[in-house]
Length: 170
Figure 1 (cartoon, rainbow, N blue to C red):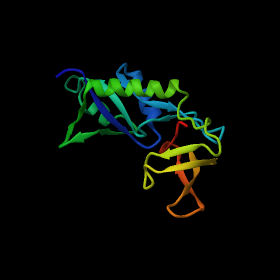
Figure 2 (cartoon, helix red, strand yellow; figure 1 turned 180 degrees about the vertical axis):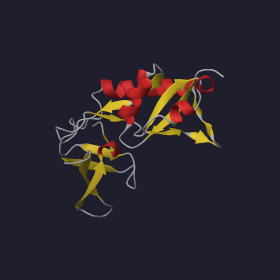
Figure 3 (tube, rainbow, N blue to C red; figure 1 turned 45 degrees about the horizontal axis):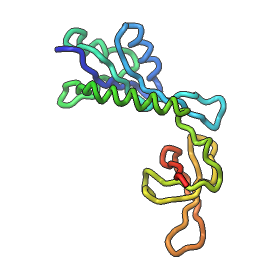
Figure 4 (cartoon, helix red, strand yellow; figure 1 turned 90 degrees about the vertical axis):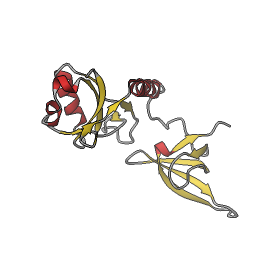
């Protein structure tokens, strides 16, 4: 076998511990993280892009699967029929580029949105609808938008995750 990318699962909120263990063994890995701008200034400024998962570049025949299965705070590899699933190199390369783009753009930021800005809902039950940005909400990266329903003059407030909206260019 040869070096391939695999996805290693970690226990919730233990990704950093597992990442440090992998680093200390000198193994190539990719733990995608993005910068965020939390409402709480004491909250972490970086969060995993795929919470609970990281990519390991290894020759599992040479190292052995048990190297990772018995590592503290891990839950094993993403597997199919008991065999760790490999991830093509080009997928990992594209992910690295995308994470770099997000971080160079300032991370997951919605500071550029002001009350009254037009937004499009990208995900969830209202996907594809346009709305008006109202406010950032305290807590876990949430926003409030105002939607106008068909044949209704009122604007209905809807709370969404920040990742569910994007600003419309006017």
